[in-house]
Image (cartoon, rainbow, N blue to C red; front, side, top):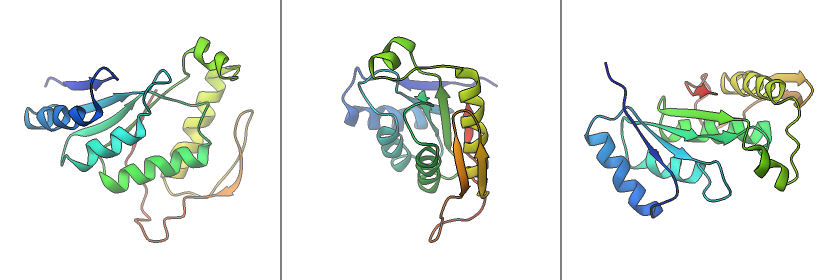
Length: 161
Protein backbone atom coordinates (compact mmCIF):
# COMPACT_ATOMS: atom_id res chain seq x y z
CA UNK A 1 0.00 0.00 0.00
CA UNK A 2 1.36 3.40 -0.95
CA UNK A 3 1.58 6.04 1.74
CA UNK A 4 1.21 9.60 0.48
CA UNK A 5 1.34 12.76 2.56
CA UNK A 6 1.18 16.49 1.92
CA UNK A 7 3.95 18.69 3.35
CA UNK A 8 3.05 22.37 3.79
CA UNK A 9 5.65 25.04 4.34
CA UNK A 10 5.15 28.80 4.36
CA UNK A 11 4.92 29.63 0.65
CA UNK A 12 1.11 29.80 0.69
CA UNK A 13 -1.51 31.75 2.57
CA UNK A 14 -2.48 29.88 5.72
CA UNK A 15 -6.17 29.96 4.76
CA UNK A 16 -5.30 28.29 1.44
CA UNK A 17 -3.68 25.51 3.46
CA UNK A 18 -7.13 24.60 4.77
CA UNK A 19 -8.29 23.99 1.20
CA UNK A 20 -5.15 21.98 0.41
CA UNK A 21 -5.70 19.77 3.45
CA UNK A 22 -9.37 19.15 2.65
CA UNK A 23 -8.37 18.27 -0.93
CA UNK A 24 -5.66 15.88 0.32
CA UNK A 25 -8.20 14.16 2.57
CA UNK A 26 -10.68 13.82 -0.32
CA UNK A 27 -7.95 12.24 -2.45
CA UNK A 28 -7.04 9.69 0.22
CA UNK A 29 -3.75 11.13 1.46
CA UNK A 30 -2.62 9.51 4.70
CA UNK A 31 -1.31 12.65 6.41
CA UNK A 32 -0.57 16.33 6.20
CA UNK A 33 2.58 17.76 7.76
CA UNK A 34 3.07 21.39 8.73
CA UNK A 35 6.63 22.69 8.58
CA UNK A 36 8.28 24.43 11.50
CA UNK A 37 11.98 24.77 10.93
CA UNK A 38 12.70 28.46 10.66
CA UNK A 39 11.26 31.48 12.41
CA UNK A 40 8.45 31.78 9.91
CA UNK A 41 5.37 29.84 10.90
CA UNK A 42 4.52 27.88 14.04
CA UNK A 43 3.34 24.33 13.29
CA UNK A 44 0.82 23.98 16.11
CA UNK A 45 -1.70 26.65 15.10
CA UNK A 46 -2.07 25.37 11.51
CA UNK A 47 -2.21 21.79 12.82
CA UNK A 48 -5.22 22.71 14.95
CA UNK A 49 -6.89 24.38 11.99
CA UNK A 50 -6.23 21.39 9.73
CA UNK A 51 -7.53 18.97 12.36
CA UNK A 52 -10.69 21.05 12.78
CA UNK A 53 -11.62 20.98 9.07
CA UNK A 54 -10.93 17.27 8.46
CA UNK A 55 -12.27 13.97 9.73
CA UNK A 56 -9.71 11.24 8.99
CA UNK A 57 -6.38 12.52 7.64
CA UNK A 58 -3.49 12.47 10.12
CA UNK A 59 -1.97 15.83 11.04
CA UNK A 60 1.71 16.13 11.93
CA UNK A 61 4.36 18.67 12.85
CA UNK A 62 7.27 18.56 10.45
CA UNK A 63 9.15 19.24 12.67
CA UNK A 64 8.97 21.06 15.96
CA UNK A 65 12.19 21.23 17.91
CA UNK A 66 12.90 19.84 21.36
CA UNK A 67 14.68 22.95 22.68
CA UNK A 68 12.19 25.82 22.80
CA UNK A 69 9.09 24.34 24.44
CA UNK A 70 8.89 23.31 28.08
CA UNK A 71 8.22 19.56 28.27
CA UNK A 72 4.97 20.09 30.19
CA UNK A 73 3.72 22.59 27.62
CA UNK A 74 4.81 20.31 24.78
CA UNK A 75 2.79 17.43 26.23
CA UNK A 76 -0.23 19.66 26.94
CA UNK A 77 -0.10 20.97 23.37
CA UNK A 78 -0.24 17.49 21.85
CA UNK A 79 -2.90 16.39 24.35
CA UNK A 80 -5.01 19.35 23.20
CA UNK A 81 -4.46 18.52 19.54
CA UNK A 82 -5.47 14.92 20.26
CA UNK A 83 -8.65 16.20 21.92
CA UNK A 84 -9.44 17.96 18.64
CA UNK A 85 -8.55 14.99 16.40
CA UNK A 86 -8.32 11.78 18.47
CA UNK A 87 -5.80 9.29 17.09
CA UNK A 88 -4.85 11.53 14.14
CA UNK A 89 -2.05 13.66 15.58
CA UNK A 90 1.65 13.04 14.89
CA UNK A 91 4.38 14.78 16.86
CA UNK A 92 7.26 15.17 14.43
CA UNK A 93 10.15 16.39 16.56
CA UNK A 94 13.78 17.15 15.77
CA UNK A 95 16.93 18.73 17.13
CA UNK A 96 16.50 21.98 15.16
CA UNK A 97 18.90 23.69 12.80
CA UNK A 98 22.17 24.51 14.61
CA UNK A 99 22.80 27.98 13.10
CA UNK A 100 19.29 29.19 13.91
CA UNK A 101 19.38 27.68 17.40
CA UNK A 102 22.66 29.48 18.07
CA UNK A 103 21.22 32.76 16.76
CA UNK A 104 18.44 32.63 19.36
CA UNK A 105 20.78 31.69 22.21
CA UNK A 106 20.30 27.92 22.31
CA UNK A 107 23.34 25.69 22.61
CA UNK A 108 22.52 22.27 21.20
CA UNK A 109 24.86 20.27 23.43
CA UNK A 110 24.33 16.51 23.58
CA UNK A 111 21.38 16.62 21.17
CA UNK A 112 20.85 12.85 21.23
CA UNK A 113 20.55 12.79 25.03
CA UNK A 114 18.25 15.81 24.93
CA UNK A 115 16.02 14.09 22.36
CA UNK A 116 15.91 10.81 24.30
CA UNK A 117 14.86 12.64 27.45
CA UNK A 118 12.25 14.70 25.63
CA UNK A 119 10.67 11.67 23.97
CA UNK A 120 10.71 9.63 27.18
CA UNK A 121 9.02 12.29 29.30
CA UNK A 122 6.61 13.28 26.51
CA UNK A 123 5.48 9.66 25.97
CA UNK A 124 4.95 9.12 29.69
CA UNK A 125 2.93 12.33 30.03
CA UNK A 126 0.78 11.44 27.00
CA UNK A 127 0.23 8.02 28.58
CA UNK A 128 -1.34 10.03 31.43
CA UNK A 129 1.33 8.97 33.91
CA UNK A 130 2.51 11.00 36.88
CA UNK A 131 6.15 11.67 35.98
CA UNK A 132 9.24 12.29 38.04
CA UNK A 133 12.36 12.53 35.91
CA UNK A 134 15.78 14.00 36.58
CA UNK A 135 17.98 13.97 33.52
CA UNK A 136 20.56 16.23 31.99
CA UNK A 137 17.94 18.35 30.21
CA UNK A 138 14.60 17.66 31.84
CA UNK A 139 13.85 17.88 35.55
CA UNK A 140 10.24 17.27 36.54
CA UNK A 141 8.83 16.23 39.87
CA UNK A 142 5.47 14.48 40.06
CA UNK A 143 3.87 16.21 37.07
CA UNK A 144 0.94 14.94 35.08
CA UNK A 145 -1.46 16.27 32.49
CA UNK A 146 -4.50 17.62 34.33
CA UNK A 147 -7.28 16.29 32.10
CA UNK A 148 -9.92 17.35 34.64
CA UNK A 149 -12.70 17.85 32.09
CA UNK A 150 -11.23 15.81 29.26
CA UNK A 151 -10.39 12.24 28.43
CA UNK A 152 -8.16 10.56 31.00
CA UNK A 153 -7.04 7.61 28.90
CA UNK A 154 -3.55 7.40 27.36
CA UNK A 155 -3.27 9.30 24.08
CA UNK A 156 -2.47 7.73 20.76
CA UNK A 157 -0.08 10.45 19.58
CA UNK A 158 2.65 9.09 17.34
CA UNK A 159 6.09 10.56 18.06
CA UNK A 160 8.42 10.60 15.06
CA UNK A 161 12.01 11.80 15.28
